[in-house]
Length: 317
Image 1 (cartoon, rainbow, N blue to C red):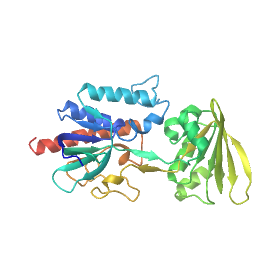
Image 2 (tube, rainbow, N blue to C red):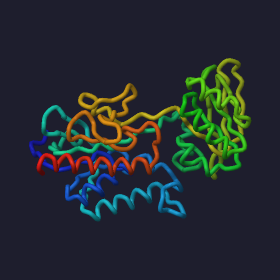
Image 3 (tube, one colour):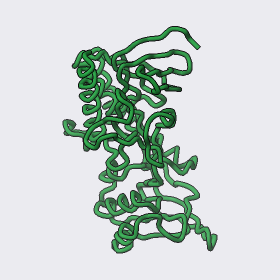
Image 4 (cartoon, rainbow, N blue to C red):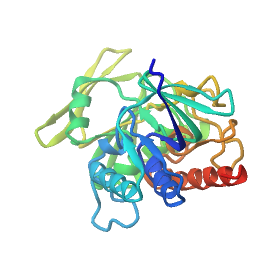
């Protein structure tokens, strides 16, 4: 372990829309923020080809391009943006201790957690291929559904969010095929009934995806298998949506920060960014399992920076 300890006023962990927005506000408030980009610089948006629903971009913008612009804006106000990720924290005392890659130790007066969440995927080679080339695989129907207007799509999942996304797609697409792994939904009765009663949603129970099919342009369908009958068949579709959940990237904070059963950080007071540890704040998808949009993440990033600034002011800093 390095003996060198760096003291900072505001440490931001993570670099999606939440982290960069927090940095912009913290930097403008003379908090000299240090931001560590984490394992996936730019967060989930870097896997999104087109962002068309963020205000201020009338022609749309690619996810990576938007993150480059947000980083440049944070750096313009002298945010210290660094590559690297946090491997350990100690929030037990007055000083918030954070270790970067098990080597560097930082003592921060305030910490803003914006580590986000990672979408769960099926893990098929074909699925990952089309996800990487941006050719029809997505984990967010609200973000990407518009691109499949008037087309046929497939959605995998059986929970509330899968039902919600299927229903959302049904308003844009000519047909939505929903693949449910078991013979029942995990979703609440009201959500399950909503998709069951939607005319252009076909539900296939006991069905697993064998392969996502496509060509050099993108997805053309999927090969699926019925786990009871063993029947294998192809389903035509231009969009393949995966709605099997997200995992918040919060494991390292577990010993100190209050979370729900799935690992989303709990706000100490609704309508704020406060956690149960004074001086530690949270924003973005690490705490938000409901909306999960770039614009809402950015909004909570602003809140976290303002809350951190008030915390320091109250301490006379």
